[in-house]
Amino acid sequence: MSPFEVLTAVPTIEGAGVHLKRVFGYHQQPLFDPFLLLDDFHGDDPRQYIKGFPWHPHRGIETITLLFSGTVAHGDSLGNSGVIHEGDVQWMTAGSGIIHQEMPRGRKDGLMRGLQLWANLPASQKMTRPAYRDVKSSQVPVVERNGCTVRVIAGSYGGVTGPVRDIIIDPELFVLDVQPGKEYIHSVQEGHTSFLYFLEGTLAAEQGQEAHQEQLMMLESGKDLRLTAGKQGALCLFVAGKPLNEPIAWGGPIVMNTREELRRAFSEYEAGTFLKHEAGKDQNPG
Image: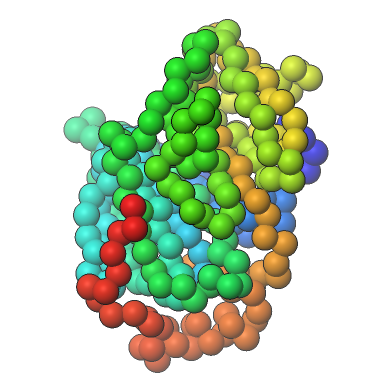
């Protein structure tokens, strides 16, 4: 995929009947290394999301959930439980294995919106201890510059560093709110995979390429990025990370490096030996 190429999210159904838009996933993964999947779950009809994502396993990945409207209640096999509110972020490292559930609830008017991004773990960390980083909206620093508001979740922007740190893929994760006609300017690290996903509005590159709501724009690494918002402004997610360049064996919610590791993971899940760490032993590092 060339720089500034645009992908459009496609409808799909996951969990117990959650209607969502898949931005990229299994078939596009080589293009997005170290990222595996991006889902946009939103709507104003609770019947299309209320049954949520009941108990299911993960191993070998990190799941990053960002909430824009509504709430998501979660619980897991380690005894953790809580609620993600509007503006909050949950960064879950599944590591050696976790079983959890995520149950969305809309606002009073029914509106629910969130994004879930999956990041791969390198072979050296596939069987690491599971952990959470629960980041409240109030913990996310905000940089305002020339009509562009940037919420810095991971990485640095304008001399400000986000609360999610010490992640091996060296991620940058920003939520951008760009006013009409204003610019988003940023230097993308050389060799890093980077893209923008649009929740609202449009941004156009200097070369003329443009993306809008429910579209993803690939970006060129090692370059100074300069994008201008359209008449409606733009609300979008900026993502960048260092590729792992490792083989992938992917089976649904589990991503390993070999087919044998994948087979073993599902065999352990069926046998009841999937979990490698005791409840109450894992603490939120954030």
